[in-house]
Length: 210
Picture: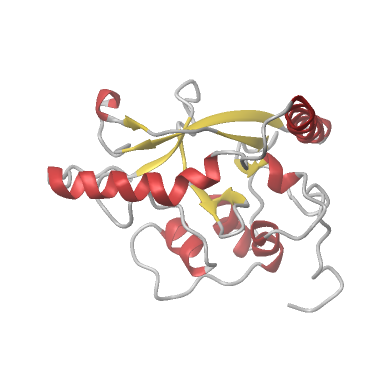
């Protein structure tokens, strides 16, 4: 949602610092000892996740973190460090989309994002403002860049006219599914594609009453 007011400069600086410290770990790969074997292992793991995405009719989306995306002038957006690769699924019926972090999609172990998607926990009635962002916080994740502020932020792909700025709900285990996809699914509405059966980790609630 666009907002016309921008935070004062001192507040903006604090927000930028918070955005870098809070979200940077989610955009970078773990740091391991340098060496050709380790580099090859990382490349192989990434290629494996990309192949898994494509094999399930997804599209690999490379996005970059930006702060101040509520400003209508893109020249005022602040490019932060790092990048992240998502798998984007687009519905052939209504054109809706859902984005899943590649490592979350390809994980055969439980992740907080996958469990949140499967659980379909109802949206709390206490939410105010952006319902998707609020729902993400309710689940224990965050899609906020620098906390609650008028500047905004998100995962940007400027070549994408539909979802130029993506609200990705990032959980403490660094797993992620986009906030709107999670929110709609809590109402039983599938955006893009039903991830049950697509996420490598199977639905643990499938044979249980919710």
